Image (cartoon, rainbow, N blue to C red; front, side):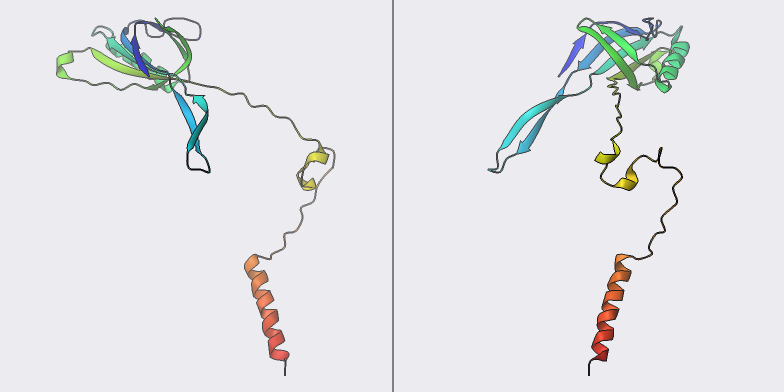
Amino acid sequence: MRKTTEVYGVYDDNFNVAFPAAISMKASVSEEAKLMEHPLEDGSTIADHRVIQPVEIELIVFLPDDTFKDTYSNIRQAFHGEQLYTVHLATGMYSRMALQAMPHEETPEQAGSIAIALQLKEAQIVTTQYQALPPRKVKDPKDTSTVHRGEQQPVPVKNETIVKKGVDWLGGKYDQSQKKP
């Protein structure tokens, strides 16, 4: 669902206005969820849960002719950077927003000014957790930690493939059939 709302500002992580010379015209916010549907054995479909998608905001900004080159350069630098922003709208604050796209059109009628449709998307950062298994719970003993086992010597690899085993087996059958009177 897209809704258009009034824009108060785009802020960096220190809550400073990110692009002060850019005049915010309007914002379109998209807050969506994906309904997970699965087929049942009788042919019907069931929806058992939904996944909330990251928020997307399209922010139309106008860069006036007296500062548009510097402001555009700042926006472009931010686009190539890793900075996350907070977008303050009438409907609320949207944090951890990353610049996803910055399309714009240039025409002779604009006379040095430019309008950019900044597209921001919520960055959902997940911190993974790691916990080592105790050696007794590892399925294959050779996959356990080698910290307290000393220096390990490599195990020679048998140079037998499935094809070679099959040829050897067939060769053995062939040899046996030749020995019969």
